[in-house]
Image 1 (cartoon, helix red, strand yellow):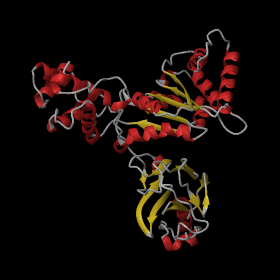
Image 2 (cartoon, rainbow, N blue to C red):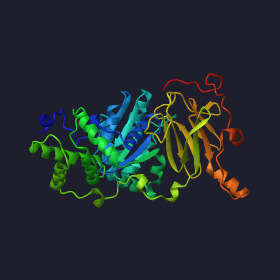
Image 3 (tube, rainbow, N blue to C red):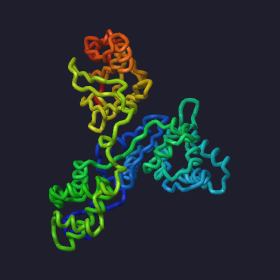
Image 4 (cartoon, one colour):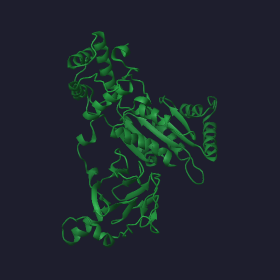
Length: 432
């Protein structure tokens, strides 16, 4: 092959899902965080969708590689099975030989296994890849498994990963009970043009390029135009181009070499083939985007950010892959989230080190009210409910409400913070 020719130690654009080559774009980091949340929550049930080649399987392999020893995993990849075949596959992953068991015995064995693992202090995760192929009857079995619990909590975490058809299937009326069990849903989009370039460079560096330019700068816009930012397509095109350059004894891939690879593959521009992987910013807005509330991030009395809340989830944490980044050593990587519906906003702690405080009390889960002040370390997040403010001001003046400032917090229902983290009743801070 071309390894010696390009002075590389590994093939950079293999199609196999190797965690060592994972490039975490903002969207991929978000999907990975959602998978990790199944370990944080006892009722973890996550659905990740994405087009073919978007990186779902690589994310799963990375997630599995990083799991602690106290986590037991069943990974199902063959999904064109009957309900009994599915239950047998799950038990086989857990080390049983269940192929002569009837359904009642399968369920009893699985139930007892989950209870035993819980008693031994181990977490159990079921991962189903290519879940779009599951029939509704098998999905119903998964719903029933998600409900197995002790007197205190559920004992099975679940991750379903699949192509966009999975989301369409889950939105069917007959699966409404299953969807109600799902804690998080996320659609993995293609890479942006900037991330596409970074992805190529990342894989070359992992393969031993050590910063050497193998693809010229002017090739990256063309790579994006013909791959649409789909990782698997990027791998295919770049590998083909490198093979062609190797055959011509060229040490660098320029426009000519890349165009030759495109012609060899018989590709047309990606936009002419599909628009299913458009990023959300490119999609049309719908009524579900109506602003429900806002949060104002404050540090030492100064407003540093403001974010609108629409139906969905807003993740708050220290790293850039969060929806709201709070750059502080007292804030965990993924610290908390706000789940917004048309009727309510709920604050949830994501197992943070220093905790989440409202009215000087540490909370795990809290229904937010207009004027609530959320304390994360030395930062405050003021919650402004647009629904209540809009209704009051429309009734009084017919005008839209303005957000309360810091001086209005007490009037809006919030409480003053002492400003001294060391005083009694204030959150105790540790470095996350």
